[in-house]
Image (cartoon, rainbow, N blue to C red; front, side, top):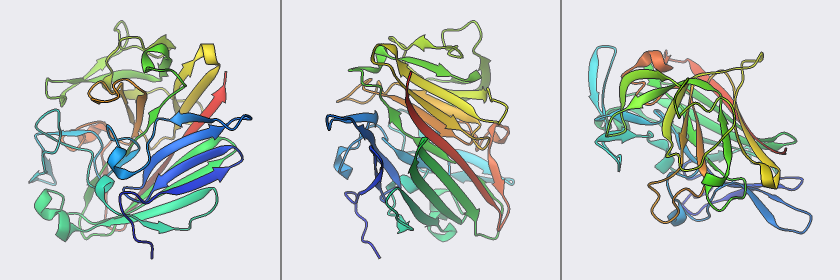
Length: 316
């Protein structure tokens, strides 16, 4: 069995594509292409070595993505208190698994599966008395990088579950202001000063946050949870980052399991503000533990939920 530390990393390959995964948190640390001159062209803004991570780069966010206001929620009539670990407000943020060593399963040249278990006995004191088996698979192929998740309730009670991912994307610009983005969503959550949702979903139409069609990012300070995703005939929702002068684009394609996407310009990252754009697929919106109608999964004992998103780099 592999000994996993914060510096453990595995490299996946497919043709000229490379991905670096760490079983520490099952994190996506890099995704790049090698051009004809041997240069590395970054698709994901990444890092190597656990101490170099900034702003949640590539984290897996389970059992809740985003923030839970004041770390408090009720489920099945019982109140719970989570650790308030948010640097920007009195909230719980992004679950537990991003700081855990995962076990590596079925490592191949172009794919790897990482697995971890949350035990109710361990996390009850931290406000989550539920048991989950979790698997995340990364696979490089002709279309790009696919990321699949499977979460199973292995406990004896119904469990609240949300799943999210925190990749940052770059199309080669020195700052993300120079790129354009399209976000296929008609609504977004109103946040309070502590970045927790107020409970209101606002319509994007007529606002400066309407990115249903390509617009320059410019000086926009994104830290927004978009909802009511617009889907194609196959049920897929797509957000796209592009830079026309360099002819580069990246599609983030989300299946029907994802009901929200957080977009973040990284303004609070002290040593590299606005270096890239986080486009975060989430199965539920921020604070869905207090608003289960926003996509929260209720897994019965023995039940699973699963989903997939794809990172598709392309030339325009």
